[in-house]
Length: 574
Image (cartoon, rainbow, N blue to C red; front, side, top):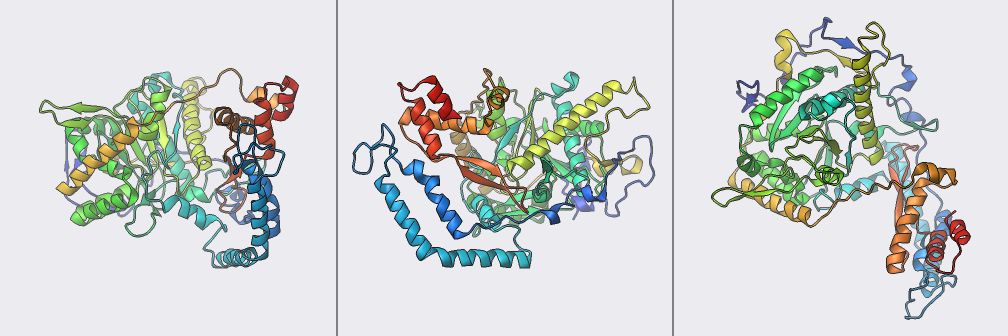
């Protein structure tokens, strides 16, 4: 599908909606190598391709009913026991060493469940797992339930679901503070990673020699959470995605980043020039105007509201429908923010939900000049601020933090390797001292093919009802932002080295710290959990390990006991 377009002096195709897969219908990639082409090669065995180990992974085992119920009392004992400073259900003080009425009732419920309801439910679970295995519809017996937990709720994904990362400053001090340079660098590394994933040359994850499941990487690029009116949301993945969407000043652009065969079509300088052209074009629209048409803020709405608005937009015109398909099918969204965080706290807040900055025009009409509307929360977003600070915000239903961390780590490390290459090339012009971290073939669009990567602007036809919805969505989001504080805790007195040297787990140390803090404030042991990676199993994600154990409860009681000695406290900690 292609609509008429015109080219501005900035090199932007305006009013153009061109389906990315059809911009270069015959795959007009130049077949010959030239000075601008690079072909990165790694020595790699076929057995080490991205998804080569999937078939070797075991399925997540289902424990027997007896095993589960035998462990259940220990999992809840600390929560159902009385501790100093607490009262039991009769309002009487109770010792945590004495079994409470609540715990006795729990044991009776366990016995009854084992005798009556448990066995048939266990049989149904085993049959469910077997059918999913035979049909190939389920990789794990918990897979569908995890998906349901993420996609079924109707509330906004902002603050409630989408996680974020803040990146360290870039290694090249000449580039790291320049927004367009930093954005181009990160975008180029992300595009190379997408190319490597398409060709299955991304090195598979492992932990202590054990292979980890790579299935989530199929939904890292080209994925989009799609709101549904009457059902739970869905995640649509376009495996043929080749383009990147850029958001600047609440306006949307896109450019082709890969050839149809998955080869990279741009280098870092090309992306810099593309972003420069986009910045020049986006600046032509005043913020008070662009904020009223900030389509991305609709992704912050409760999901049913967003589904209804999306249907209105899509049904308005074929042009709109094509534009939404372009956004949905993008590899990722590159967000260019007109904001300079004062410190790490503001940087974190910007990556989590954007900034709030309400301004008034001369006619006393308010408009949102912050970055909170310059987002598309249904997709993976790479966010870059005015001063080069960067981070990501990602849609959580299809990928977990471990997968997102691999993405962030690889693109940041690739930036470091590229910087190392740049400062050693004059010393070692003929040697590859620092081989590329990401294995991707790069074949720039040159000559007659330069039109292939030219940026294009997405202009949608928005009826008044949608413009009103944008206004109300911004108001609701702003209410959430001003009622929330984001503070980054950087503890510098000691860290992992000291904890490990004393034969303790850093994760457990932090878990106990949080539990103790709550106990000191309120005198209660509460339910908390530590995410545990289950990627060593086929289609594994994470599991919630409950950390409020009797040992943890005893630790809290001991540390809050003024008569406890230092040795007693240390023994309780260990």
